[in-house]
Amino acid sequence: MQFRQGDVLLERVDAVPANAMPKRSPAGRPLLVAPGRGGTRSHVLAPGSDVAAWSLAAVPDETPDYLVVGLHGARLVHEEHAPIDLPQGTYRVVRQREFDPGLAAVRPVLD
Image 1 (cartoon, rainbow, N blue to C red):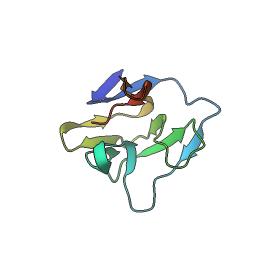
Image 2 (image 1 turned 180 degrees about the vertical axis):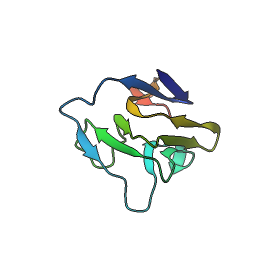
Image 3 (image 1 turned 180 degrees about the horizontal axis):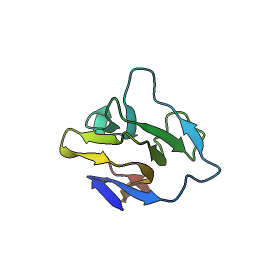
Image 4 (image 1 turned 90 degrees about the vertical axis):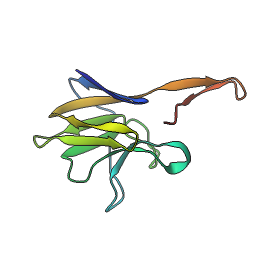
């Protein structure tokens, strides 16, 4: 099962990898799934979402690589896309990437 919201793809998987670490959002703020341009128009999980996030990177400001949605579900929101209600399950977060010829590097797309 897959869900897409702009440049973010959520793909259902069997489990979170053993080397992933828990990721927490700052108190009182929704969990950031993918940042938007200039810090606005980000993909976030709505307050009240029943979700745990996991990251493969040790950097605290990295977005999650995996989401474990609990029995009560979660809602992914973005101001330019329809919200997505996620059913219970484990999801891998895949962000679209693009090649920047000026930097000669691949970077995440910012929606």
